[in-house]
Amino acid sequence: MQDFAYLFGDSAAAWLRGRGDARFPHYERHYRAERQAMPETFDLETANEQYAKRCEQRSGARLLRVLDSKAFKHLVFFLIMAWGGSLLLTTVGKQQPVAAGVVLLGIFVAIRIKRRREQSRRR
Image 1 (tube, one colour):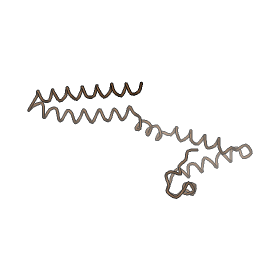
Image 2 (image 1 turned 90 degrees about the vertical axis):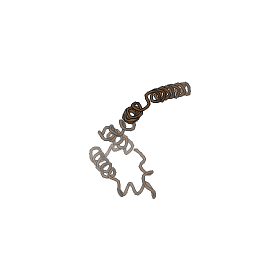
Image 3 (image 1 turned 180 degrees about the vertical axis):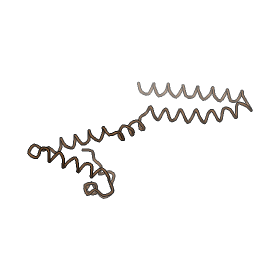
Image 4 (image 1 turned 180 degrees about the horizontal axis):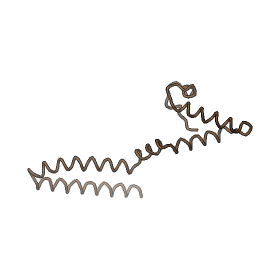
């Protein structure tokens, strides 16, 4: 079972009492249904593992995994930089095209150097 005790200042007992956490009623329903289905062979550890798998399969958990993924973070960063850069580049490019070109070249070189350093650290 996942440990939700870190969410509450006083203790895990607060979670078990269901104070302010909507996950407890879901767990309680799952626990009672499992216990009623097999009262003589009920195993709490197995029931908890099934509950954790069930929670992972929910669409909300998938969405959170996608939002927390490295690829999504890179995509958001790229889109923000592209949007901001397009605004900045058009303004500066009209007034000083050579300076804008030099700045862009410097940015691309800096990105390339950063990526090479990260790759060499991984090895």
